[in-house]
Image (cartoon, rainbow, N blue to C red; front, side, top):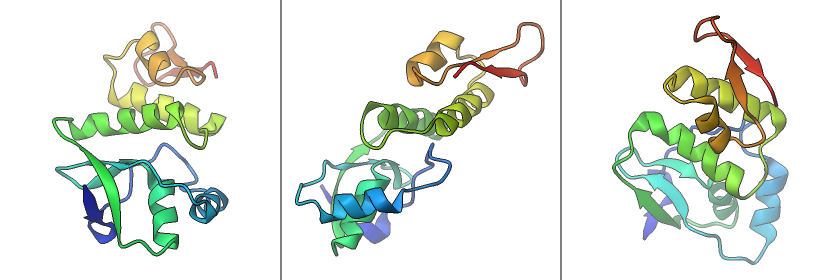
Length: 140
């Protein structure tokens, strides 16, 4: 489905520095057709594809292909964004992975260490036993 670029809201990105302008430029200069941008339909927030979206805008696109997701709680969108960024595209930095893990620990206290490691395989964090939910030891 094609959607106007102006209708989309920026992602709640796991990237601490936001989009990488050099990567956006490389994508824009390529002749590849981009995969659809993943968008949370109720909020129109980009979940995955901010680099591709910025590259499409650089190419002059006014509309982009999107894949809508529904039935996902807004609190889970960040976890989906991290999973997508781990799976493909420009790799997350170690600092990005650590910050994402800390945010997931804070927002999803019911997640076990293994559940967090499944989302962020190379950026696992764990709680210090008996020190409360705020204490986190980075093991990245």
